[in-house]
Image (cartoon, rainbow, N blue to C red; front, side):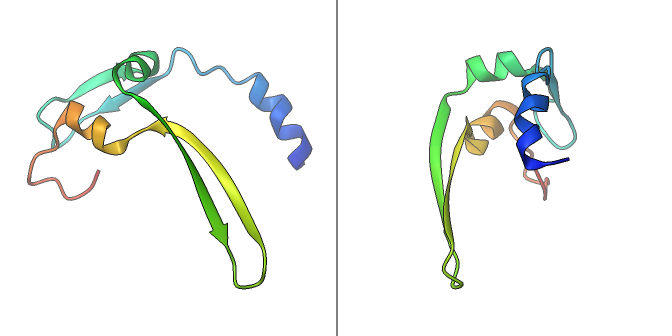
Length: 83
């Protein structure tokens, strides 16, 4: 796959109906529709800047939901070690 062809394939990618299942050591295990999550959680925009000692740099935009806000919905138990 060449870098130039990724955007063509991404245009055909169906992202609905996607679901996210949360289980394990949480107070509120459940299955979320991605559309439901996007309505329930505020979207955030961030820009990450990477700089290398070898003189290259890049800025990467990111749009998504806060992990902290998501965890408040499912409430991990105190015995949970990983999320």
